[in-house]
Length: 324
Image 1 (tube, rainbow, N blue to C red):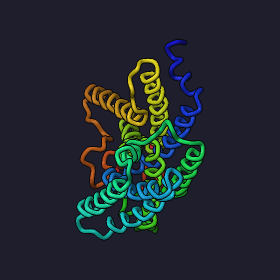
Image 2 (tube, one colour; image 1 turned 120 degrees about the vertical axis):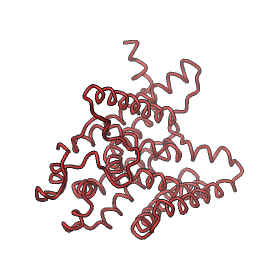
Image 3 (cartoon, rainbow, N blue to C red; image 1 turned 180 degrees about the vertical axis):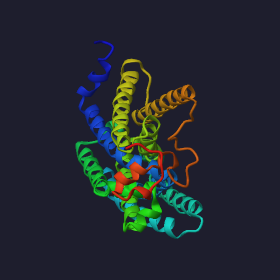
């Protein structure tokens, strides 16, 4: 029992239990939104959104302190999602346009924070988070924001999956691409807002991307991706928090909680990747489901059954290869 006690004892403390609640809620949303990001190949767009939300976080924090952080971030997130959707649909060189607009917005946030006296301390909080000091009010705010993101994507989940696998036929079937893209981008931005307060603006991308990428390594069954991603993120959050507490309190090694959780996420993904490589080597296959060099769409998971399950379309509407 002594071996496992560090995994439970730390969460008897109120600040640790609040941090765990925040990360578990984020894990649930990441299991849904993050998988869609991975299927659509929107990792770079998600990175752009993290930069775009930062000015709102900075302005809200400077003007209203911790109470104004969420409001400023929410306004910036909604504006960024709308601008991003329009850029993707209209710009000829999408990646360049995203990089230019959102790095400029990130710079604006840094300039706003630099006007304050405690510039270094405030910038560090915004960039790397303050997971262990979240208040009960901020826990409630995080739950509400994640709930809205979950609702936006959950109500259109089948349509979102259908669009991820076959954009052309999705539009031909009567679904509105602009509406679906807007809802997904708003949901991504809301997750960025919720996670930024916990793990910081620079590390939020790992919370959003890694769980979905892990699930893609583990299974090719579409609807298993979502619970696997959520479960993996939740376990890593629990273990990462416990590890950071044990190292800091009992071993004198100061480990930032947010960064420790992210490292555990990445380590879990690395283990799954190596296992998948070994399994595919034995089977004589190749690794499928990684998020490397995928710009045109989720080719490894295209399939007739997945597309039909997503939108109940005719059999000849999708390609082959995925099990549902």
